[in-house]
Amino acid sequence: MKKKLVASVLAAAMVLPLAACGNNGGGDSTSQSSQSSQVASSTAGSESSSGGGAGTETTEAYFPLKDSVTVTIAGRREDAETAMSERQIFKDLEEQTNLKVDWIDWPGSQFGEKQGLAFSGGTFPDAMMGNFILSTTELVKKGAEGWLMTWNDYINEEYMPNFYALCQRAPGLLESITAADGNIYGLPQFDMVGLSITNDTLVINTEWLEKVDKEMPTTIEEFYDVLKAFKEAGDLNGNGKADEIPFTFQFNAGNNGQLSFMGFTGLAYNTQHERVCYKDGKVVYVPQEEEYKEFLIYMNRLYSEGLIDPECFTMDQSTYNAKTQTPEPTCGVISIWDAARINAPIAGNDPEQPGVYQYLAPLDGENGKDPVWIPRYTPYNRAFCFVVSADTEYKEELVRWADLFYDLDTSIMNSKGVVGIHIEEKGDHVYEAIKKEDGSNWSTAEKSSYITLDDGMYGIAEGDCEMITQDTPQSKASANPLYEPYFNPNHVYTYALMSEEEAELDSLLKPELVKYVDTWTTDFITNGNIEARWDEYVNGLKKLRVDEFIQLYEAIGARSSRK
Figure 1 (cartoon, rainbow, N blue to C red):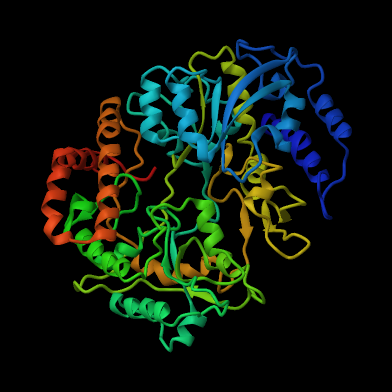
Figure 2: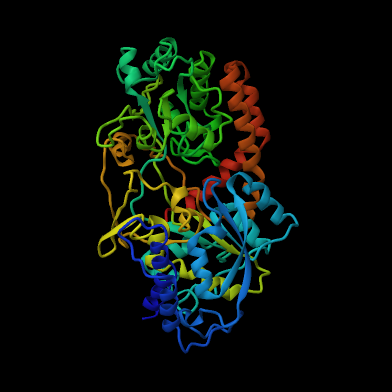
């Protein structure tokens, strides 16, 4: 009964008012005032705390607070998405709980600077919320340093009935968010339904292939020949401009980068930062292996002949989107999440057909090794999204407020969309996406005016719900059978919460290694002379204690598994 009451409060406070806002058909039109009445009646007669209560009340009796409380929360969001203070979900929740939030806006382009200032002596908020608000390393480090509240005493049926129930449905979740010192410093985003099994994919312009009389490439030499043909053909898109780009990617971006592409060498790393994998049963740092040199030599060949986008090292996400998602194609080969978003802007595109841009299979290299592709790996503690300051006066209020988001129906809404606007319920917790009136899909930026999406908390275990998908040749799911046979079997589990000592070593070594490798990689690809300078580069890695870094992840990999 407790869980049902909490769910009814959230449904009244958020789902129905949201459905009444901007609904173009199919949603509930119940007014805001009537929803407030529902909440009031569901909590009538309860004694509400004004903060720092003794924890004797159930959550449905706790809200609304008798006396209004104001907390400050820093909210991380993508630049194009709605600021937290303007999202309908938080407006409705504030009215129903009487917990007011003074939001501090942290757009993605300013996130690093603003977060750094908060920890370096600026005003530290009561809480921080957002996708990857702290990495696992940062979480443990800041927790051990005393910045963050521990959740150990709150994750139970009394304080957090929704999150506690989620932990029962997902065995291992609680262990995965517990640091080596035994403390829990933050809450995760958790959604194990409808996950993609790939990160980046490669798509190729098949109209251009036909124009240059080439087949789909299957080897890196054939790939080179295709790119060269694209460059030499001239005005392939027929716009009278020399704006064709043979191959573009966003350097080191997880979903648009070169991480999987380098798998033609037989070796690739699954994570952008740690850059380790198993080779012959041992953990290696990929950027110092011979396979990485092979990758660099090939990429320099492409770059030196003008076959790679010269902006690949500097583009931000918005620039990349503007370049690749255009009505008039300007790129031959693109690293991207899925083909659908590249084909959608092209005039006359039919999503039921393969489209101009089609998926390109992993390419064979020249060293005789089987190519590998990067699988999408989603650990239980993938993204810590909510932390509370150790110094806040409002621990209990924030704990109980956070738990509301882990109600299943609320989690589904925040992860998938609002019922009646973005998704339609076809059965008991079975949903299908609703398109906009013009037939297009809702973008995350558009959805963000209603709900949290990846900027907030949600918890959905396997089997909690089902999303009906209509796979098309352009959809992400269509790429799965192409790439799955090549999935990298040598992944090192890097998501374990480290001990304070391990986290300190990681935070000391990793940033310098990443900076060094990225600088040299960019220079190698753009300027070449790789063989002559390779030993100098590798010696620099040794000076940066790469061997200690490898040993660190050997230990982590040996004791860790997917929770």
